[in-house]
Length: 207
Picture 1: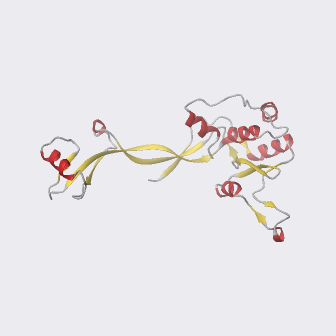
Picture 2 (picture 1 turned 90 degrees about the vertical axis):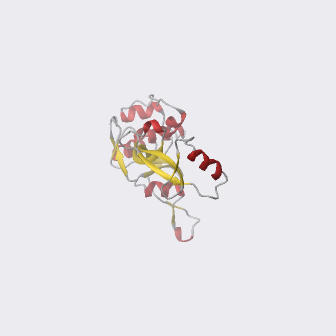
């Protein structure tokens, strides 16, 4: 199904990526935002990108590096405080009590004769012992499935400045600490996400 970008109800305070670049360089002049690096040992000093930097570039983000080490990515333009994901619409199978929902639909899945359980399943359908099994007008045995359209979180559209700062702090870069980031950007990095382990991982690590 198609996807549509859905911003969170609260994106928090935004920071310009140019402000982030300048501020991070103030904290440590060895932080850089190059999409490629020049390796003296390469023939002709060809520019090479590692997979992480290439991924950041392909997603329209800046790779944030310390010296020659890739740390994480950073959004361009106005950077929201929190992550923004795309929203995907997909059909999922649900229990029959949800069949009256507006987005619900019924699908019929043919059970082939060579199915090892075909005889038992057909007997159940003939004796109405299973609500999900039916014999179609043309004699085919089929299983009815109730499907509804639901929204789920898709790919990360923007990682947000908390993600970038969090990863830089955890990388133990000289001069980049909770205290120095707070002072430089006027933020509070003491806030931590709440939720399940999966949700916390997505908020802090997922790119």
